[in-house]
Image (cartoon, rainbow, N blue to C red; front, side, top):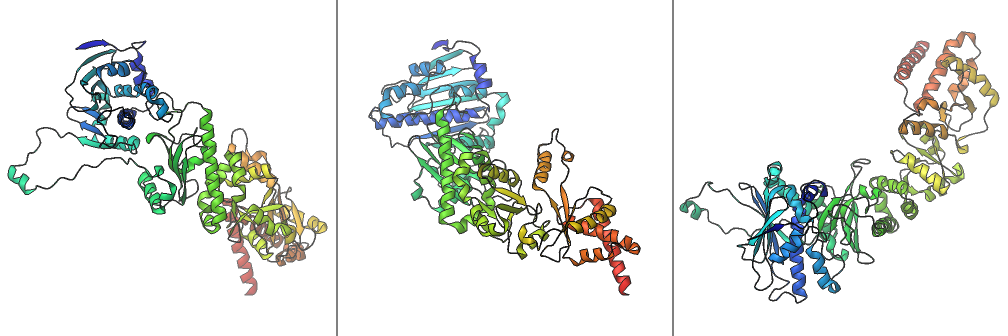
Length: 629
């Protein structure tokens, strides 16, 4: 037996690794299974390159994960390249000196860059995050090699001796510590394997050692129940759909993969299959999910893999933030991962990859818009939050997709901004009128409709910053439908003399000396009055509510104007009795009611104002009934 010390610079290195190298302790499964997959991959490559005598690259390679809850062990075993005692001393004892480095140096001219994952040699030491003792049993593929056993109990001392292993490959056995005993639960361990190793390119088999002393069947019972056992099935998929050529995948293949991966019973709307080999390797599938409501989830779930090994969800360095509203997988074998394989190092390569993904998503949207406009229109309500958010976040994305951005209209269809302005500009000029509450603003919408005009519907939380973004970048002007009266809705000019006569009536009735009144001739005679609020004033109040802080909505006074329609019968009747001393109560009642009717189409009444409106409505009905009786 040989004894020695690990070749490290500090006796404290293992505690540092255990506490700080990885953010999650369950990473140990990913690292050990990934190392096992590397061992298999190295042997297959050696066989293909003629450097493994008597071994075929087509052998049945596999990884076994063995749980023994009674003895508190987890073992990861492979039939890969194996290690000699000298290799164990070199690759295991000398922390951060990986066998992958030697392998690449030996075969580098015949391998693609980053063809082997394990560059750092630290993954194995994640074992000590959950184990008091770790044992390696390994037999090298080399003819005549002896099996070796390495044991370490978490300090700097190890033991290296002969092993009884008689088959090629490596088994790493963890003696799980008390603090990590929950990893000995079968359900939890299976879940971790599914999370990290679901698509590792070597078949993985899970085995659970049953405790000794359980109920034993009699020979007769065994004979009665005898049946041919089903062959074990791997728990992973070694050929995920993203590795296939897009032309070989059907719609049903894409949907089935989506349902399996995300447990979402709804079908995705559509998807983008990424398949790139130059200037970097990138494969993956991005799905546009169907949302139940706006921004159902601030983040979707884009899973990042490196050579089919799961790295993390939603890494913003690779996936532009706005694309994280999507779901999907990206496999990037050339990712510049840091030593723990968990995070990305800063690299210009990453920004190029991000730009490429953005371009492919924009291309897909533009292609669907041009080739299948009907389907694109149907998808719009679901994909618009993603597109609007993306436009706000990335100017490059906005520039690519702005011609494919749609707006739902009060006419009931979807139109691009150019299409909409093209059919409305004659009556509305260069202003794009919009409604953000169809029910509240129904009167204004009807006035537009009666004159053959439309407004766009902007009713989501994203719409306010979105139109501000468009105005800033494309010299467009948006105004809410109640911010101004389009010339096409008027039947003549405002009457200043009439305004002077009516303004004091409403000021007295409402007790508001600052009220602004305008007397207009509107084409719709059924409308007694409308309330206007300038677009600038309203936006400033919305910003103050949105950002809070030291800004108070009360800092910005409403620039409201009550527009009275002199073509309306009620307004004309008011003019007829305004100077009658005996009808002062009626004048006040009518003024208040006209004002509230205008406000109802502008914004919700306060509780107090609504109570007064209902009481006043009853009074008016009582007077009408009493007069007729």
